[in-house]
Image 1 (cartoon, one colour):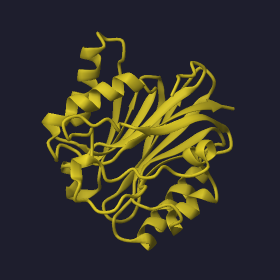
Image 2 (cartoon, one colour; image 1 turned 180 degrees about the vertical axis):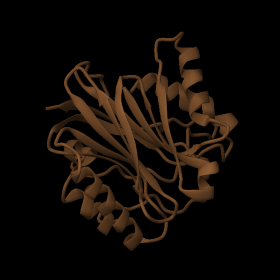
Image 3 (tube, rainbow, N blue to C red; image 1 turned 30 degrees about the horizontal axis):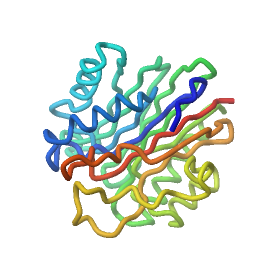
Length: 248
């Protein structure tokens, strides 16, 4: 994937908090993040305490000699679950504003981080939908779309671990309003984003992770990311996605 210097590069990854051999795999995650150098990355299953985002940002800055500097915008899950885990957006471009939304079930939240690029401002929605079935997830997706409707019209991206497979009611609902970046470029979703060699017992392969864009965003390239395997380790139990986007 050759970098288009005029594009905004975004990525998404479920980092699996600090479970599943985090200390063994964390350098692999950082190395791939540095190689990709996205302007913004949305992460899910982020450990709140101790601050996992802070460690990632500090390590990226250390290994690049300060060339890549990210700021984190975290949001814990609702209730007691938020002590342990949440979601976050790491950005190395200016952040104009940040907001969050209670998704109404399973302690899940979404966040909107608006960034300023050379071309335009961009609303980035980062979400981790629930595990309670398609009715629950479809309701959360509708809640997210309603939230987007209350925003001024402009370029927007929805990304994250949506816990829903291609063709499911949740993905069909989102696809009625937005375009999957991977479908735009490749004509379909990737073969899988789960499982990875980190958790070989996690069941059959499927796609749970997505980047969706509205009609004011041009998808120039996209692919699966964070997919390197080293000594039986991967960066996470999910593969991520990276997308190069143009803003209208």
